[in-house]
Length: 373
Figure: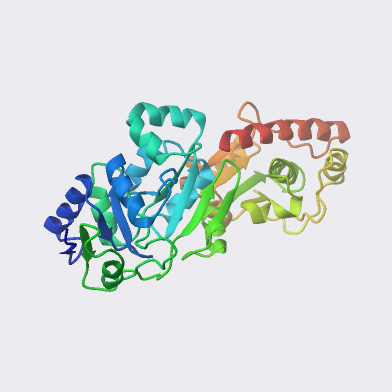
């Protein structure tokens, strides 16, 4: 066989893009440029994958990463995403990252109903699936037009550097693969492999350093949770502290490490002054429950805080209304902390009222965090 070049000028080259997608759907091996390195596109079917494994000297039981060209395709293979995964997908895809998703048992049941058994067996392993959505316009346009799942591992034999140009692909695979997509401009702008990220129920882990720095991944996926009351000296600081301890416990880390693991938790007040210490009763009740308000100082709620937050929890209906009044777009992410009742302001009452308030907050925080995780 002879490897042919398939020239594609840009994403408006409809005939050439359609040909590349058709070739992939028919089982051809087509080298495609991405923003990182060249990949060898291959339909997910036993015969084509066996041929690809031979070229890459790869074990047949090792799964490849699914490549997609749209967010609609992602939904087909990963039915539900938790909030942190949604943030990462929104901020990082398309782009030079590979995301390994952990699917729930329910999602695997849905996938098994909607996809052929052979596809599930060839793509998923231990309820996980790696997905790459390249930002290279030609690669994404080709993938978006395919009708079958496509993988595209880096274009290199085992223990060789990935190909970054048409010439490097041909050096490795001339007359071994069917086509190489060629474009008029340099293809692999990042000139290195994608960053591989694993998204679990609780944490996001970097499995391989690559084109996107680890800190950028954390910034893209960090979940910002804001609690709001009136003065920011009792209810919302207690909720903030309870929430931070909740995450520390389930993540198995210290209170101080919670933010670095992707959960940024804060509080503010609708009518708060800046710099007031927590009320003595609030601080005391928190100490009784191994929760600390040490170092907390009140701060007034701002529009910037509302816009930056991913989730906002108000202590009362009136506070919820004020938040939405400040930013109508916040309605989709702002909730009452206790959906069943307002959390009444304990200011002016004794310690037992603060204890009741704390217990209500603690139960509500646990319910809400279970919902988002």
